[in-house]
Length: 103
Image (cartoon, rainbow, N blue to C red; front, side):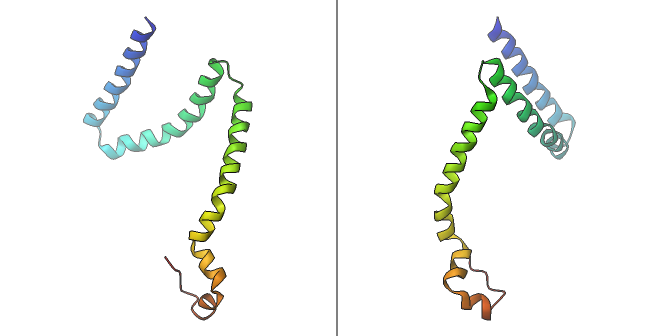
């Protein structure tokens, strides 16, 4: 019975999107979706986690710590590939040619 309810809701949402594309222009629909999507995701994900019995705040902080560690591992590679590294190795390029930005 739960699967049937989920399918009905899913088909209702999909049908509504298809109908809105027929009735309104694509740009109008995308503007509405873009305004609604981010707040909806921010609200739905924690509620879903809480309903499954997760400690949402602890899971969030653990993920943030892990993401910070990943960022620390990525930064040296980003620095080597960025134009900032070129300027730090060859400062004469930005002294004599201030408009120079390497690709």
